[in-house]
Length: 165
Picture 1 (spheres, rainbow, N blue to C red):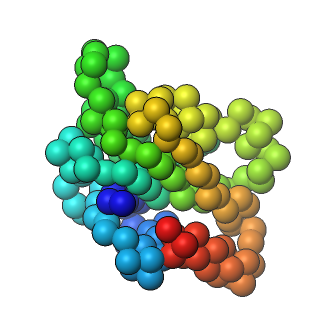
Picture 2: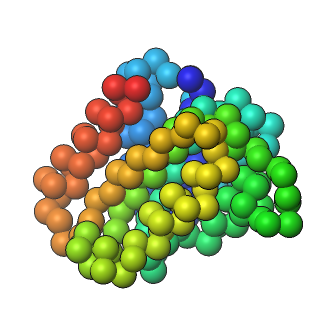
């Protein structure tokens, strides 16, 4: 399975960068072929990169309830979510879509607010993937109020999930 990891955060020393590093470490342990695109520094994946992508991993902080603008722009422009694109389906090979994110508020508050970011991926991105595509949500809620040990434990969980394939 070919995995494409798209990370969207401008600060290389951020928790989000650490999450991306742990995704990579897990994929290394699993022996899975992958490519990482850090949108702040690397060229974003192009349709040709996505044509062989079976697992798309989006690593981003949830800001104001959803994905950062840089990630949304890429999804809409490159991944075929723009209605003007018509039949373009560059994500047609994607059988797994995984979001790895952190949120400042609690899970309950996010549910009460409608979980826009999660809902957007399920309703708008997953349908342009392969018909049998599965969605996975790996979120760390209340990130600003968690002790360092809890954040470290979550990083371990993320790596372990990707190490299992």
